[in-house]
Image 1 (tube, rainbow, N blue to C red):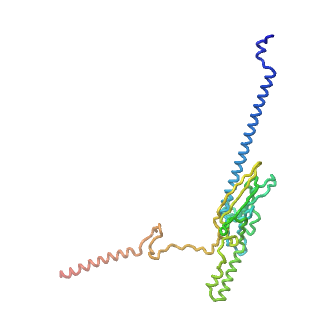
Image 2: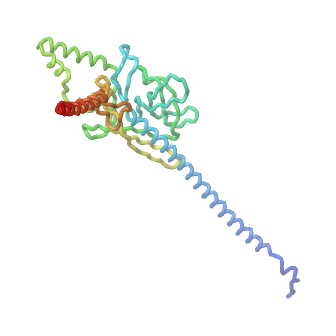
Image 3: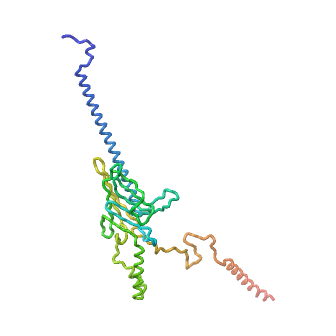
Length: 315
């Protein structure tokens, strides 16, 4: 049997080379698959984190603004303003006190109209959460204003309203105060009619102020005690549901007609007493010097009177 030379013994055969190439290809495939899976997991994690961040920011802002919702019975004769709270299952429009004026000298205040709802974006074709804000409160709160997108890939937005009388969640809550003046005129006319018929003014006022039932629902122009918000965001392979609740701070309509202006502090028992925790800088008793002088004079007179008889006795 012929022997191989040392050089030929160091070389690889074709079979060995093919086996090495196959093993290297398998290792490369495993490495590429692991890298792709890792990159996909990182991408999904980032998308989920972004959705959580968007949902947290949107719900936090909605909580803060809904908690500042209010209604007001004060209107001019032309009824140029209208405060509303129109709550539906998939949208909410309300007047609030949380507007921030960003432009110096603009004709704005801390009041405004806000609306939340879901619309389809014309460019991307996706459902987005829209916030519409109108900085001027007029008699058309459902029109106008500026829109901005708060969240993308929104599958569903749901609102629920807590009725404190029924102790249950309601799917809608509608209050529109645009006839406050008419209601006040009706009450005044009723009081005048009863007073004219009976001759008792107090009875007329009492009859006009009687309520059939002490309730706090939309028919009584009250806001809900709480609002529940449910936001569902859609990803490629799953849905993310977020839910929160917020409490409405001012439930009863504002009525500043009975506000009393505070009067200056006055202590009837001691007119010279200062206000609590305050001492006037010019505080002094009246005729303090005169009283002191009178005491001094009186003392002098007493001493003089005692001296005169002594002098007389000497005589």
